[in-house]
Image (tube, one colour):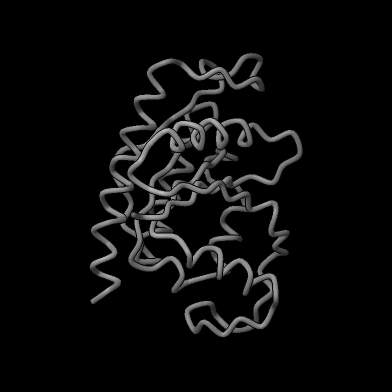
Length: 186
């Protein structure tokens, strides 16, 4: 059974992402096709990238990097929960991704974005990053609008159809994660 991380990609105080990530995790926990874990990048307190050697060499000097690498390596796939800040993902999520390389390789990823335009531009940037990390990103995504899925831009009240969108996303992430395990085994 694949193990899927739901990665909360914001560290901003008062972040909307905590409610979004918990909602996705609650939907995922009702499924029996994978083991799901909520991973909050804020719990890892990663500083701005402080490794002298490029992550592609896998020579991590910092204890926080080794802890983060161990956590990320333990998964077969990922669902990234990303805000959209200035037409891109959060700097904190990009930094957390950039700390590692091989731990991401040959796995699958899906995206749940939120923002004024549903986080779609943040997701598009993440798709480019995932390609460089040899991560197979799935087509389905969830786009949550601050105008229709939040009250007063802060209280998360997702539209009913968004639950189906999450399940479609999870179907694809689980399927691709299972398939990518054969690539890693080879």
